[in-house]
Length: 357
Image (cartoon, rainbow, N blue to C red):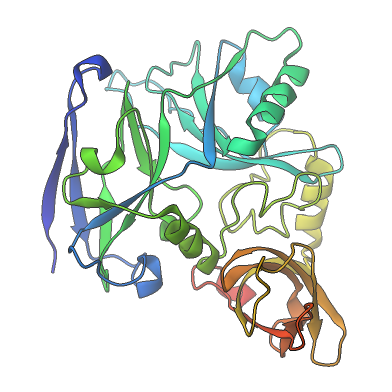
């Protein structure tokens, strides 16, 4: 049943003017499966769940030369506004991209947010990255800045939240109107509709979304693993992960028509050859798990003991594994220090292109 709810949130006096957005519930074809929502309906009946992402941090990058500077480093286009027509500026947009090394391997995965004050003469962006790689990314940008008119600085004023539907959404899509102001940016997660929305705010997420509840970050991570979405250095080890094996194309994170960028040669060649023998798949572990979990890099074996890939990262019985695509349909397992092996069940997310299933 379609419904419309009005969410109002008022920023504190120090945070600037009050702001509001509308929630639209539409019958569409994305998030139509229960896997698009987090679990079942929460006991408190909340329509939304807000997850504080303490493992994510922000850098602000701005200046007259910021657009060509970032284009030469990122795999994707920038979320820039279209041509000026005298109309009010468009709402905030975001894009997903990787920074690569010269060998074409992933260094940092980022979500870019166009700042509300962004203008063609001096655009500005917030780069969301893994908190553990904040300093390294800052140094990486400083290394290539040279004499460009670009300012790079940590931006701890905003906190990163994920916003997901908190109730079953069979046959319905919950849409928030994209909004950008000095104290808040709300936009769709650019990777996939399954990951809901991203909220950057100086305040507490649920306080800005009446009817929402505070979620456990571990539940968000479990949801992310179920959807096969890697995030941060645990899932995408710097200098190890290859972007196309990490499903960067599926997550709208690469443009094959933009100008040159560092690491482009291997990425473009692999794409145009059309052969990707290994992919990062969501997996479920069955059996007696070691107390410390499965060690990243542990070999995944077929029933006959042949190598099928390697376990990448996980939480509890959920995780990601880099596997040969021709091996995923047979029985797989991991050998541990325990007597019995741990069985692995591979799934293919329903939001992936049909040709990969």
